[in-house]
Image (cartoon, rainbow, N blue to C red):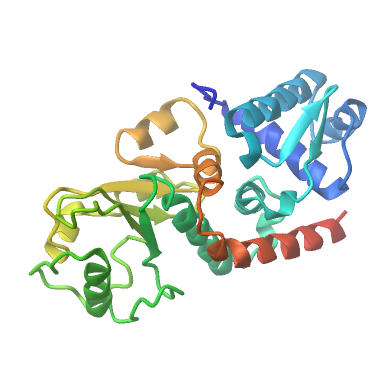
Amino acid sequence: MTSNYAPTRRASKIADWIEILALRRGTPVAEHTLQHDGALHGFVPADIALGVNTVSRRSAVLGVAYPFKSAGGGVAAVPGAADSPWVALLLMSMESPARASLDIPSAAEHLERITTAALTALYGPGTRAVRFAWPSEDGRPADFPDAVRWLADLMSVPVGGAYRPPHRKDGGVDVVAWRPFPDGRSGFPVLLAQCTLERDFAHKAADIDLRVWSGWLALDSDPSTALAVPEVVPAGEEWNTLAARTVVLDRTRLAGLAAQSQDTERLAPVRAWTTETLAHLAQQE
């Protein structure tokens, strides 16, 4: 993968707009069309050039995980783009014209599914990941104390002795990933992830309290935390603030990991949702 991909907020905004336009048209969008339609949104030719260049950079970074291509100053969606986690995340993002009509709880569940599938590729072969958010298709009990015990059993670790409040839903954790070693012993890597569709998501990096979780799960080594969002987090203060507190799983990282995942069955409802949302978006043309 190409290193040091650090887009600005404006570059990402324009590239997202270009991707949505290509999806809506369903055919390659030429440079003159981008400039004509872009002018209606206040984009000058230099903005369009920036956006197309950002599309090219995304393609270079993600390879087959990125469902768009650029050529001759234009952009096109690749065949089967609707099956890509990138497109699902794009449709959930704040810049998406589909955002206003989304069923947010349903979209949040699909973000959690993408994150779960993506995290199975995080630590390499043998990594396991489950949706801990309720409701979950992974068999999680509704009652929080029972859910923690269920998770501990899956991970083959003891339950901690701390009180587990029954009124809790997920303790700030939507997805849990871990990678046991063949020796079956304790002390393996664990990641606790929070997923959010909120516009201002920086504060969500603190939702997972590791001191509390250390009392619920008896782990020999401290877990890591992550924040999953459908946006492309821009370079600068926002990224630096998040990255100093947690592992950032933005659209670029989620799509790249999901493309390596073997958990394709989990993404089936996401693909169906993406196809339905794109059809609804096309009707708004």
